[in-house]
Length: 256
Ligand SMILES: *[C@@H]1O[C@H](CO)[C@@H](O)[C@H](O)[C@H]1NC(C)=O
Ligand SMILES: *[C@@H]1O[C@H](CO)[C@@H](O)[C@H](O)[C@H]1NC(C)=O
Image (cartoon, rainbow, N blue to C red; front, side, top):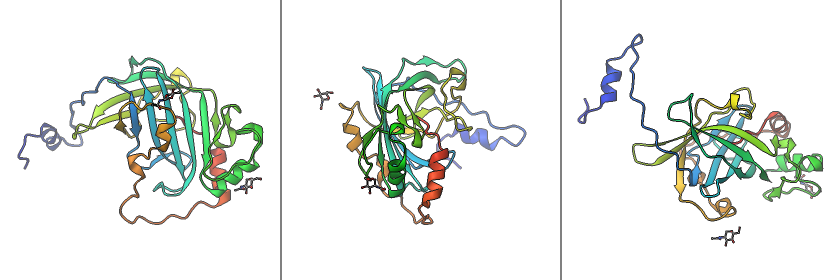
């Protein structure tokens, strides 16, 4: 029924439960990280963490920064806190275990935290100052540097941190570049040893612009996914404070 030849459709049509189709792998592109990459939708991680990611990679200095916006609901409408992290990454080497994948090592050396709701702000206010950002009050929407306190324990942020990563790039049918970053371990830990390096990928990020000049600039930029999701899904209630604290207390923050 296809006007144009569709080799994959033919393979699928001829397959059955006992003879699954063997599709040709899509060619992966050489890894060109330089520039800005954003989530296309609200993403979910174990321990009920909903987030969107926005990364900028600076190819010349091999430095990177990531902005992780966390939400309490699966539609990413109720912000809880934002983390702005930065560090360096290694030169990539082809993966021996995953065809088409590139292995990299990421360091996280700096982090800033912005509480975005009353519950998270109150929790940070009540936490031990030496565990997150030092003395001083937190207020909704105000960013604080947590690098000097080696991260922010109440939010599961520990610095400095190293992650062993697997990346690949592809092009979608419209010619848009996609960046796949390794899946997180399902046990809630982080890939902090070479043995725990991912062998599969998270949902891809889309390219959102060329190599940006400065660290502070992408902070102001809103990723494409910030437009309100269309279609009236169920309106989920905001998590009550004890639940949120439980979730945050148990949650480990995963980088990348
Ligand atoms: C955080 O602490 C400051 C100073 O003690 C206070 O003014 C503010 O209301 C607190 N915020 C929350 C959400 O508890
Ligand atoms: C980028 O930041 C550096 C300092 O880190 C500054 O010297 C430079 O002028 C900035 N460039 C732009 C385009 O803002």
